[in-house]
Image: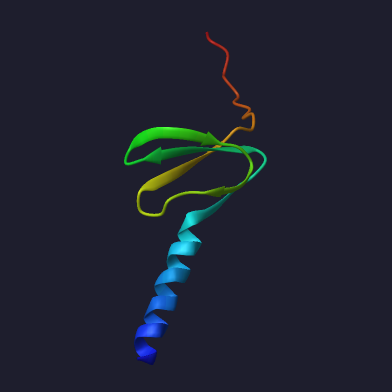
Length: 71
């Protein structure tokens, strides 16, 4: 009986950990549900449905690229 309770608690903790994501102030989160665009998440705590929704974090800071002059 104790083994089942322990197993259930572990599964609940894993699902809770996968459902909360942190998006930093310089990032945007693209949330997809089953591979299709759902919404864009701003900075802060974001909740998703684990195993159904996926979040892809994109860095929105400017990136400086040196381009050599053309000859």
